[in-house]
Length: 118
Image 1 (tube, rainbow, N blue to C red):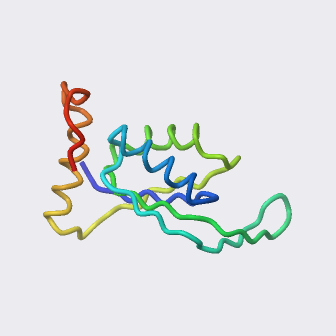
Image 2 (image 1 turned 90 degrees about the horizontal axis):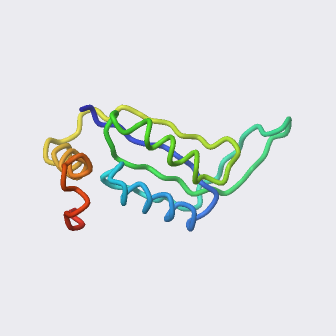
């Protein structure tokens, strides 16, 4: 089970919090960092656009990439959201253990009955 970081810009802090909470509640990610007010400059419909966005960085495993992508595609307000996974290498063992433990509860047979955890 390899670790990965989800990179996903969203339009605002409320969207970021909603997506982060949904991913955490489903135990698809162990932790989400919400970075406000980044400036994005990009091509859209033949024009260069400039927008302020909020960035989600979430720690997960590569086994969760598909359900995360499906969740974000359903909930993200953009027509074409950026949902990118970057391999997470060189992670200290204690943090890697935390991520794996937080996500292991998702697949446990009685996961629905377990309390919040981390």
